[in-house]
Length: 191
Ligand SMILES: Cc1cc2nc3c(=O)[nH]c(=O)nc-3n(C[C@H](O)[C@H](O)[C@H](O)COP(=O)(O)O)c2cc1C
Image 1 (cartoon, helix red, strand yellow):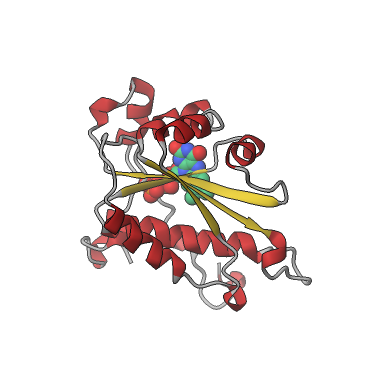
Image 2: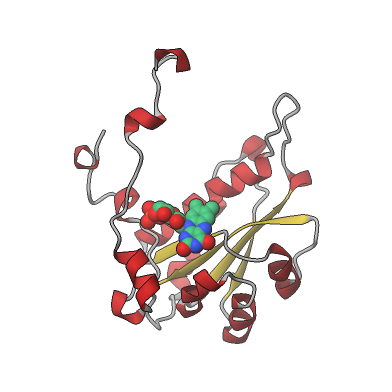
């Protein structure tokens, strides 16, 4: 199914990860609605392993930004940084395949966050570009926890707010693999 076949109004298509944020705070009620949707994310055996550290205080945000990669410094303009973390011991670990469901479930909760934010007219941008140990020490996250991602959340601003290199990333066309590259019918042998 291509994009035209779906509803272009759908938050699945409206959600995107750009990098320009307005200097505008998120109303508490909007944030509460987003977090309630995250809370109702599915998880393996309903383990709900995710823990979210909401970093809104400007001084603490500035500290946290030091743990983010140079290429992610645009996130310093977002009024909220959400750090998604979880402990391996709080979820199922497969024995027949090395799958750790605390990571999988945090992915589900993060998608809830991204889509719920889009529903509120907010833009969220997940990031893996950070020093996990620096994020943990900045926020008092136990060493045994995994930091799965940091999500910038706020209102989207114009590309003009960005430096040239970052603006080039944001104005590049968004792409995806063809459906035939990611879906097979009935078995991999059918390729
Ligand atoms: C786990 C994860 C880590 C990511 N890390 C970064 C990052 O460190 N910096 C960045 O600019 N974007 C990051 N992204 C955003 C992706 O580049 C983006 O989702 C992808 O290019 C698709 O674009 P879209 O979200 O607009 O559909 C990350 C996304 C995910 C899901």
